[in-house]
Length: 232
Figure: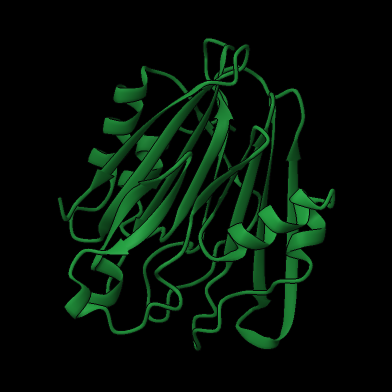
C-alpha cells in the first residue's frame, strides 16, 4: 500500500527522527528528506547547518546544551556521489567503511541502538546511490538492551513516484515505542519547495525541530537542497 506522506505525519505527533528516500514522480530525480523532532529542552535546542555537501546539527543556544553526545552529529555526508543520511554518528561509520571499499551493511553491523535507556532509540540509516537506495534500522529486542536486531531494506530500480519512510518511534508514548515493520511506502511528488513545505506543515507544531530535503538529478548527479529550522 502507498500512503500520502503528509497524512502519515499529520496522524503521528511524534515519529522522532525520520528518513524518507525515493524516486520522484518525474523519474528524473532521487529524493531525500530527513527531519528531527524533540520533546526535551536538549533535543529542541538544535538547528541544521549546511556543511559542504553534507549537513550537521548545531545547538541553537549553546548555553542550553546539556549533553551533545546524541544530538550533535552529521546527519548527511556525500562520498563519491553516494548520499549517506542517518540519525546519528553512524553517518561517519558508514562513510569510513564505504571509503575503504566496504559496504553499508558491514558498517552498520558494527553499531547498535542508542544508549538512552529505557527507550534505546533505534538508529535509522539510508544511502542513495545512483537510482537505487537502501534503508536500515538497528533496534533493541523489545527494549532488552542485551540483544540487538538489525534490519536492512534494499530498493533496486524503484518505481517513479514512490519512496519509503522510516522513523525511530512508532508514535508518542512514555517511553516512546520503537518503529516496527517495513518502511512505509509513500508518494513522492511536487517541486522541491512544495515537497519541503508539505512535510514541514504536516509535522506536529510543538515537537518539530528541523528539516532537510534534497532533490538529486539522476542524469548529472547535481542536487538542490532546502533546510528549515524552527529556531530560525
